Length: 252
Image (cartoon, rainbow, N blue to C red):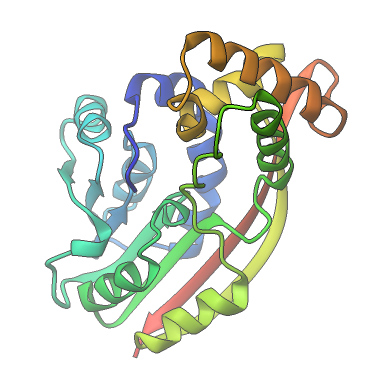
């Protein structure tokens, strides 16, 4: 997840991330006294939802700024900086939860292995993240806009968007029996009206913006908006074309 996160911008503009993740906590069904690891906890909203069940929860995130904000938001909960691929835990958790994070982890095999090691026998993993085809229209518009600028090779995409079959097979290789799996479209309204798509790129598409100077960024965003509007702008609001993979598994 080699991304520098702006925790304040995330918390102000990206409430849809944890709002849509609330029913994922229901799939986890944390119980009082269980130990739960929240992988990619962000600013802590869903960590707090899990803690409200009476479970003992630890939130980890690779971003120091996210962990700092989570600690401010929920000072009685436990948060720490950590990389899911480098988890040092061995059979310590009854459950692992992860919402909207694993598509940032290109070392997917290492992440799956580390999560499997961290679970107790019979422990469960519940995760949701971007599936194959996620934000396809946003990516296409960005690619066309970038090419039209004539500024050199387009930056590599930072995301891992697997098919359901591929990710289920990955978990199976690491000893997790898949008990539920689904992919589905989730068109998501973005806040800030006509500026919503620009805000999305500022938060999640920095690999494009950071490769340009200020004038280039402004022109890129203008061109992207023109190209994406026919499919993503309606009723005065932008909508991201999210496609999600939701999966649960149990450690054998």
